[in-house]
Image 1 (cartoon, rainbow, N blue to C red):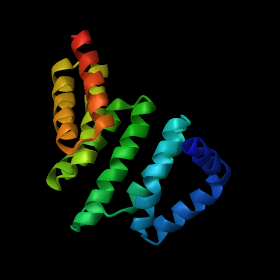
Image 2: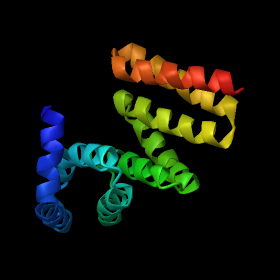
Image 3: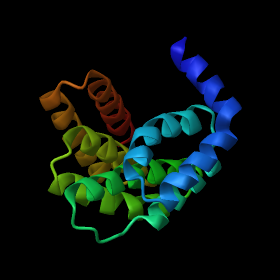
Length: 171
C-alpha cells in the first residue's frame, strides 16, 4: 500500500523531481542522486516508463566523471550504470545494456559491493538467457545465488533460483 502511494506521489511530482535531479547533476550533488536513484528506478520500472528512466540515468551518467578515483563516486557510478542498463534492457537493447553492465560489474567486484553485484549478475544472466547462451546465464545466476545466500538476501535468492530453473528448462 505504501509503495503504491509512493508511486502515485512520484507521478504527480515528476516534473519537480526532474528539475531537482537536473539541479543535483549540475551542482554535482551525487549524494542526492544516490538517495533518489533507487526510488526513481523502482518507479520507472513499476510504471513501465523505461525510456524516461533511461533519460534520467543517462543524464546522470554523462555528467559524472568516468575516471574518478574516489571509491564512493565509483560505486555510485556503478549503481547508476546498473539502473541505466536495466532501463535499456527493458527497451530491447540488450547489447547496449550488456556493455554498460560489464563496466558496472567490474566496479562492483572491485569494491566488493555484494548486494548490488548479485543484482547486476542477475541482469547479466537474463541477457545471456534471452540470447540462448545457457552456460553463461547459468554461471551468472549461480554466482548471484551464492552471493545472495552469503548475505542473506531472500528476494535475490528466490530470483536466482527462479532464473536457474528457467535456464535449466531451456537448455
